[in-house]
Length: 115
Image: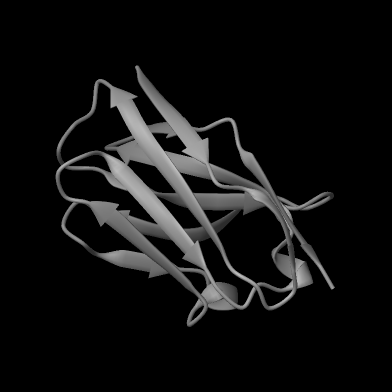
C-alpha cells in the first residue's frame, strides 16, 4: 500500500503563484511515476503534470510554460510550482503515484484562483 500526503493548496488571485508538495510513503518502488491531476467542479479528473523516476515529464497543454513539476532524488517527493495562475486552474489537485498497473491517489488539496 502507498500513502500520499499533500500540502500547499489555498486561495490566490489570478497571476499569483502557489506550490504544492506531496510525499509518498509505504511500499514505494524506486521506478515509478509521481505527479498531479486535478478535478474542477462538474469536470472529469485530468492530468496536470507527471514525472517518472528517470526525469521524463508530461504536462497538460493548458499548463505548459506556467507549471513546473519536480522530484526530490533522495525522497519520494513531488512538487508542483504553479505560476501565473488563472481562474480556470481552480480545482482540487490530487497527488498521483503509479508503478506498473498500480495507481494511488492522495486525498486532494483545493486550489482556488480568484479573478
